[in-house]
Every structure is written in C-alpha cells, then in structure tokens.
View 1 (tube, rainbow, N blue to C red):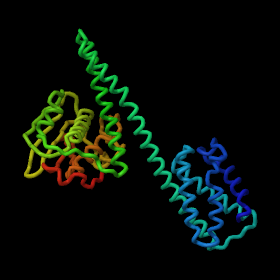
View 2: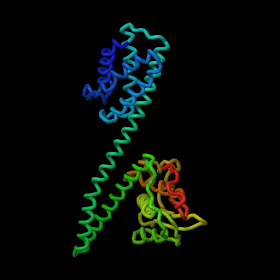
View 3: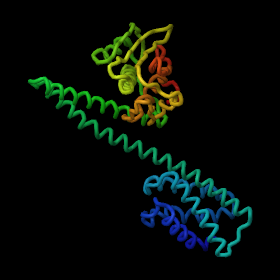
View 4: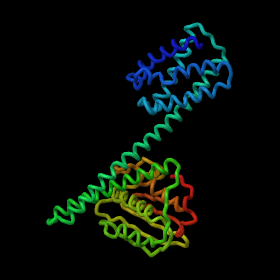
Length: 352
C-alpha cells in the first residue's frame, strides 16, 4: 500500500480538479496539502490501532490549512475526503492490492474520523480568522469615524444656516450609529468566544439612565419610576439603544415607542414596546442568536444581527434575563428583567 502512494495521490488530485470546483485553481502544493501524509498514516494504521492518533492529527492539520489557504467550505472539505475514499479503494483494487474485511473497515473508520476532525479544525480556524478580521476592521474604522464626527461637530457649531446644521446633525447621528455597531461586533466577538462580558458595576438610578438615553429622542414615550440600584451603566445603555433601534426599525411610522421602568420587590424591569408586524413565534428564540435577524412582515433586514444577542448577554450577565412577547394585537415588547443589585451576580453564566 505504501508503494502505491504516488499513484493514489496523483489519481485523487486529478479527480479533485475535475469534480470539485474549489480545487480546480489551487496550486499543486496547496491542493496536495497533507494528503500524502494522510495516505501514509492510513497505510501504517493497518500495522496497529495505536497509529490512529497520527491520522487524527494529520486530519486536523488538513482542515486548518484548508480554512486558511483554499477558499473551501465544509461541504467541499467533506466531498474531498469522500472522493479520496473512492479513489483509494479503486486504485488499490486496480493494482491488485487486496484488503481484508477488517482492514477495509479500519480504513473506513479512520476516514470517517478524519472527516470529523478536519471539519472541526476547519470551523475553529475559520471562526478565529473571522474574528480577527472583524476586530481589525472595526478598529480601523473607528479612527476615521471619530475624525468625521469631530468635523461634523465643528460644522454644526459654526454653521450660520439651519440646512447646514441639519446635515451636520445627520452626519453625527449616522457616525454614532456606525460606532455603536462596531462596538457591538467587538463585544460579540468576546462573548461568542465564551469570554465573560466585561462589566463595570456602579450605583445609579435606572430612571435617570433611561431619561438620559431617550429623553431627547423623537417618537418615544418614557414612563420611568425612580429605581436606584447597582448595574453596569454603559452596557445597560447600549442594550436599551439596541432594543430601541429595533423598535424603531420594525415599528409603525408615527407610532411612538414606549419605554417603561418599574420595580417589583428586588428586581427592576425595563420594557421597550412598539406597535407593528409581530415577530413569528418560531423566531422568538432564534432572534437572540448571533448574526440572526427576525424576518417580520415588513421585510427589514439591515444591521448585523448582533444587537439582540448583545442585549440578552447584558441581561444575563447581570443575573437576569430578557423576555419578548409579540402579537399582531398587542405589538412587540422586550423586557430586561434584572436584580436591582447586580453585584453578587456579575459574570453569571450566559447562553447568549
């Protein structure tokens, strides 16, 4: 079997270029990757099961290299191994190399295991690369964004006519929105990798925060009772901004968003309500998954799909939860329900 390595690998490479779109333009060294070493590992596996770890390690490296260098997706990666299996058995048969039933099963099992190991490594490397890209691009965006915001502030302060001031305010509003989106992406990288959301717990009045956040906003009605407590001011504010942005996006034009703060025993509830098309019942959980968005009847699909997962993570990190109800008759309401004193629960386990 070892003597046939070149023949099998060459036949596989030719078949891969013919049958796999992703493989057609890969340079030979990238296409071959660890396939020759993988073939040798399979041959040596027949000498004893202790060599299975060698095959597993090679498969992991193969998946990692495919993620970094090939442009493959997981489907192409699986198809590649399946094609390798067919070519391997076909070439061994053509060369008159007979395998026992047990040897064939051992190779089958090893290739099945290699597919699992390779796909797992592929997904991990691809996720890491995606996070590095997002982190780099969001970092690079924020510097020119800050410069644009400063320039707009100067224009607004010095403009002598109202139309120019209005344009400057629009620039400020949109640069603030982009900055918020980049911060959301950075935070989602943190909690999607399993790290705790960083919180700075401090005392403040939730009603003051809500009024500060929405007091000057158009199309909003605030009903907030005074609730002093201990929370992370910045993360709560951003979570509410995300909920408010969703309410505006999916609500009925001209119908105000209602924001309410109330206390019950040792917990505070902050609700954000809008009238409009309901969220389908089948999506009430999936909207809290990262990069997912609800598809309400209005058809809105702009945004990253990270605002609601972030809001949920904030609520859970404070030892609470977020609740959503949505019907055509009553509209949609998101409620952040957390302890009034979140200090004992900082860093609580989360599912978001």
